[in-house]
Image (cartoon, rainbow over all chains, first blue to last red; front, top):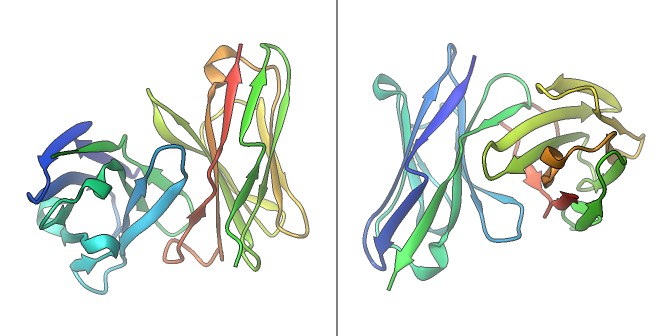
Length: 112
Length: 114
């Protein structure tokens, strides 16, 4: 069975600092991996996805994630945090079908 | 082009009642998935419809049901509402070509059961 674990339900970083949101997955077969962002009272928006084409995936708003099979990780990073990055971030995994399994989410707080 | 539209945005219902939520996918999308989002459980998959057929189902009781129409619009029904059904219900549409195709989410329907 597939699953996703996000470490830290809340993460705080200073504006301009590195953002690192951690995600580990469990899958018996090569997975499809995603990062979504949710702003208050909004639905989810896709930030980026891994589909085995390249291990380093670049997404929107300056975010990127690296797929590390040996560590079963897909951590999300951004070199310099901006106040507008404050939101909830979800890591997700999918297999051959359209069923997406989400992690519990990490709320990112940006400190001025 | 128009995004995924969910109606209504907010609902308040009484325990024991039933409720129907609607989702209009992006034009051309044939797959519609439903998710329940709560603070305690996070995002949980309810079911997915593709071309009017339920293709995937999550681990929810039979009180939760859905359907999809020929124009790909989907409805989700919850019968005999319980307090624990209070949640944000999100709908996502995609072309349905597998997990490599992007899922687009609506803004959700916030259901409060009192």
